[in-house]
Image (cartoon, rainbow over all chains, first blue to last red; front, top):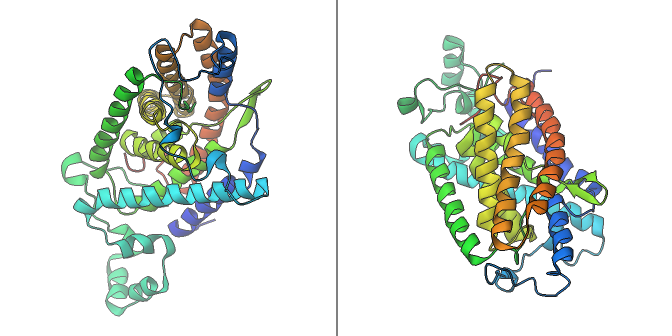
Length: 175
Length: 207
């Protein structure tokens, strides 16, 4: 099975969507290990039952719940009555949001040195028609025939910013 | 291991917020020289992958569940700086958007999962990888989880009158969860290496 890098990335994206949207519905509803430890000790020390989770030996703890309320508390979408659907939606939204935030962050961080254009970066995911058309232009074809370039131009020859300072860079295996 | 609000005292969470923020800035600075254009979508996808994995709680004892942290996976695949950025993004989105982990405790959670877990896992993986690649992934993941757990337990114990029993319970439950996470991490790392999306045992995708 020899898939292009783009297709392998899409496959990974599909796995993410399946976990966030489907497998998350099978999540075990028990409190997690930290919550469980806290609850046991709250019960023992009477902090929870005393109704004063804001007090502690080291002084006031901080209830920040008044200053910010999460739009999708506990991975549920307000207004969606069906719990499963809400959870699946929240999972997909969260995963997509994480992807978007990191994509932007990493793109902006890498921009200064490598100067990849947003369109080229996006094209490395969706490999849209315009890119394919550009690759099949005469000069690109000649280039490929002459030097047998590996892979599409926007991926293979991306200048590596770490190279100048960091010595030889281990690259993902093209094979 | 997301610490909620109402647990940590200001003497604890304020310095941790500063430490977490500082660590993310350092990681961003270190990452920028490592990032190639082709790694942009992969980093985003792996962050989303860890976010999704963290939603799937599994039972580890009667009435107790836990989820994967993902720091070991990201550290093995990406190296420390990019892994720290991914973990910090996941933990921040969980707190701000989904109310998972406190707002005041966000810095503490970033320090635990994005700094302690990630750096521990990466250090151990780098040391063991030349000898035993599979054992390196497993050991790095388990000890990474335990490092983050020790951090979480420490911050809670500095704020609340909990003693050794709390620490013991935390370490035992998270050790079990860490073993599950190690198995999942090894499987995912092997699949990613086989796919060619990340390098083989000799390297990391971006560092």
